[in-house]
Image (cartoon, rainbow, N blue to C red; front, side):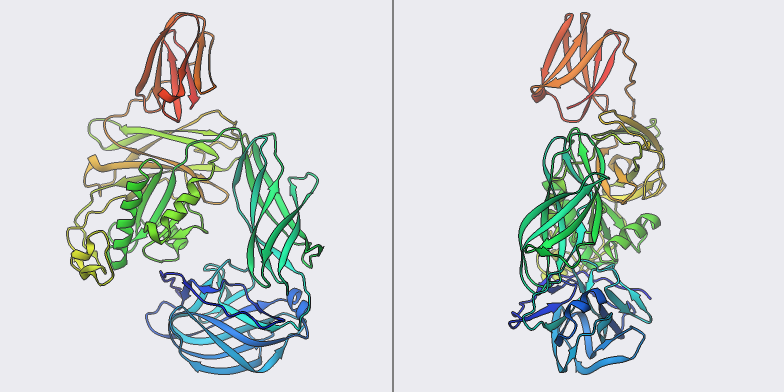
Length: 608
């Protein structure tokens, strides 16, 4: 059965404080973020449940559940019942009729006619409702914790956690239990510098958590313990930043984390751990952020996506790469569309930032795209990446490309790939639905003054092809990489027949992490003219090029001319020198990979 993820604005719910000695058990956040249904276009009966496993129920065994709260998505015509089972396919051990509708993106609280006594075994708290997309989700997905039934029961983790919360009368008991929920993947730091590892945690405690003792282990080294001050309410998720001691050697490292103590006492779940990887880099590099937007001509709300992408490009012209990936219209690319649609949950317009599943946003700046961009651009990329290229010849039937990637780490087991995206701007000839027509939905880039069907729509940032597939080109980055040693990759794109205007083409190159599928860094160029690569020769005499004190130093033992080129082969600096050393201020040179060439025949590459 098809599930449908709706685009919604987050609605915060004003929570009432639980009575003394009471707390709400659940996995979701305190608002409804997503509504899920069968996607048939009509109201259907569905059920959802959360599991309280024996590892938790044993802590609260004998205590009672007095209320159940349900976070509802949209179009809910009836909540028929709440119930509790020992197994999803078993008999009810508690059931209570509700029989009421609910406003969209809201919560219903049901007081149980008879308090339910918590057993010391797995059990499920659920409800049954009828509607279009009635099952509410939010927060971090809880594996094996949240279940959804649209014809059969299945563990649902795609949209977060089911919005069900049970009020437990804890009778003033002091229970200390906390799990690590997630670790930020791909944290990067410079050599010999302390840094922090963000960790999301979930409290199952009955009291406020004010401090935690954690331990971390890097690769197979000795575990290190740290005590961290925090404030996390009972049964709530929170974040802690784990301080990691400086590491001298660049590379990719594995780290595992445990929570040993809570408020100075042993954590019930001290044996549980989470692992992730981080990188120590020998140098930082310029970064560009890729936002891939799911859109379609049939989607009237997608006008907002087109306006949002244009605003982002205008605001961040040097660091933002926007790619419009169409769905369900003649401009769609099947493989690319499937990838993005699965990431954004078929929510249009929707966008994913650097293909990170936890960075799904609306493409309009004020609705999330700007904040997500700012978060991502602040991160240090694992590698610098620079693309050059142009048409192969005057016939303009193909494009030749060269990517130079320089990593800040060394690894004998690297897993990175390059993918090239052909982009066309100024595309016309397709009608676009427009729900902003007439201004009833507010101002949206002038489209409020256009009709409900825009017949003169101009499509920009349009993905025309992705090569060789969305996941990247096998072998485009070798498995063995050495820090600060440039890696070159060349590729040829034969232009598809769908191209309307060859003067409006761009190519983006994406550096993709083969383990996570996330984009590590990217570059974008406009295609104009015939590409002539600048050859690189082996040095024929002694020549040294290095950077120090904000200067680029060039040393050779002959009198000669020195030329400096950018990676596209454009000369950006020229000077004459005698035997010895000459320097150039970095203020006079652009950032990125530069090629320094001496007239005596040597060529060097340097990253500024």
